[in-house]
Every structure is written in C-alpha cells, then in structure tokens.
Length: 343
Image 1 (tube, rainbow, N blue to C red):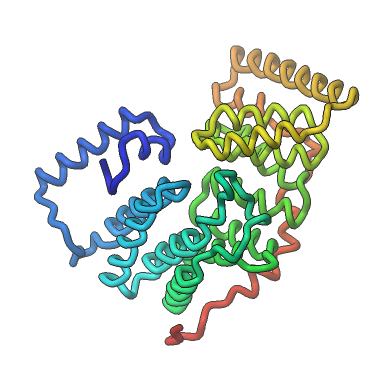
Image 2 (cartoon, rainbow, N blue to C red):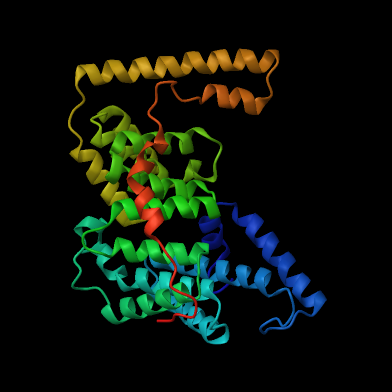
C-alpha cells in the first residue's frame, strides 16, 4: 500500500496494470533502502524534484478517495497541511491544499440519496463552509507568492466552479493556461466542457473528438465517453449518444455513475429515421477510410501515419480554437498582486 491506497487503487488512478504498480513500488522501496534516503525536507538542490513527487502522491491519494472514502480524503488533506507548515513559501503546496479543501468542502453535495448530482444541480447549503474558507485562504496565499503552477491553476478552477454564476469564459482561459503547463487528454477534456458553455456543444465536440481519435491514456476513461455522449445528446445525435453512453457504462467502476448513465440512456428519445441513416453513413465512411488507410500503411506509411490518416477529422470541422476570442479578455485581466503583497 502507498498512503492508504492499494495497488489496484493506484493502478486505477494511473490507468496502468496493477502488476506494473507492484513492480514499481517494490523497486522504489529497494532503492530507498539501498541509498539510505532519509525522511525529511531536503536541504540541497533536490527539493523541487522531490517536492513534485510528494505533491503528486498526495494528489493521487485525494483523487482516489474523493468519490467515497472520506477518511482517506481527510488523510490527504492532513498531509497537505503538514507540507504547508514545513514549506510555507511554496506556492504549489498552498495550491494543492487549496484544491483539496475546496473540492472536499462540496464533496457531500455530489451525491443525493446515493445518486450522482451534477454541479449545476448541487445544493450549496450542505457545503462545508469552514473548509471552503480555508481553501480560499490557501489559494490567496498561493497568489501572493506569485504562484502560477499546475496546482494553483487547478485550485483557481475549483474556486471559479464554486462561484454563482459560474464564469465559463474564465474557466476556458484557466484550462487553456493549464493545458500549456501540463498538456494532457484529461485537461483537454475539461477544457472542452467549459468550451461547450461558451461556444456551444459543436465546438466542444471537435476538441473531444481529437482526444478520442488520438492514441491516449483516456481511451478507456469513462469521463471521455460520457462527456462525448452528453455533447452528442445536446446536438440531437441520439444514436451516437446512446453508443457513447454505453461505452462509458462499460468503463465506470462507480455504482452511482452507472445508475446516472443508465438514467441518461433511458431519457434519450427514440432515434428518427434520418438519424439512423446518418449514423450508418458515418459508419460506412469510417470503414472506407480505415480500409484506405490500411492500404497506405501496407504500401509505404508507418503505422502511426496510417492511424492518423484513419482518424483524421473532416476538413470542414469547426475550429476548436475559435472560442478563444471569448476568453482573451479573461487571460489579460488575470494579473498578479504587486510585489510584496500578501493575503
């Protein structure tokens, strides 16, 4: 176990086989023992690298616990507070602690009678106001330290999500900035959700399709398919939405999520004849494109080029960057406090 997590839980969070996690942990323990690495705050130049690993571990523990294990989430927050005491001038430490506190402050509102509740439908009264206020204090401290790292940005995003009404253009700007720091399919997926609220589901779907069409760790990630399904539903593409919801249902490990997805599928209207025709036309086009790509691959193209050819988006697809005109003012207004300021 690591930080209270089993190998299977770590494997699920990292989306790798459990055997690989066990092998890596055994190797790490052997290395620590052989090198005699002490427990404590490093006093040499290794602090940034080692701090990044510690923060990532604490974040992993919190994320895995967030869906249900309150004790484990509390342990992650306790570790975050210890780090903030040991390293009071590290903005990313305050950013991570703020992120965990803000999310944990609304954790009990995410489920109602055992059912998953979307953010728009959450009741704010059950929020832990003390925990939220503490999170905002640590976020203010991170800003005062001119923090602009990934954890500070994630905490900013959590804070904006809790505002009423939600400032969606600001969220797009924050996710765009986060994507530059830590490019990943997960960040792009969340950016697409914000883009849908600013520029509509079609622009967001282009972003999601590019995640889906590229080799990615998200291929077996439930949220990718459930987000795609919701965008397709909003566009009236019922058959595609039903298929995507079904794929998400196959992948989720959460019973509340399973019930939510089944409810979404049941709420879909029966497909019209035109929808069926469009679905099969699209399927035939994909089969044809795949066959042509395989011919190219066999003749001259490397496998990766053939895959890109097979998964290429239509030339007339809308530009997913078009929404940026809505968020440039948000990027410009995000100024740091004057030198020496604190909160």
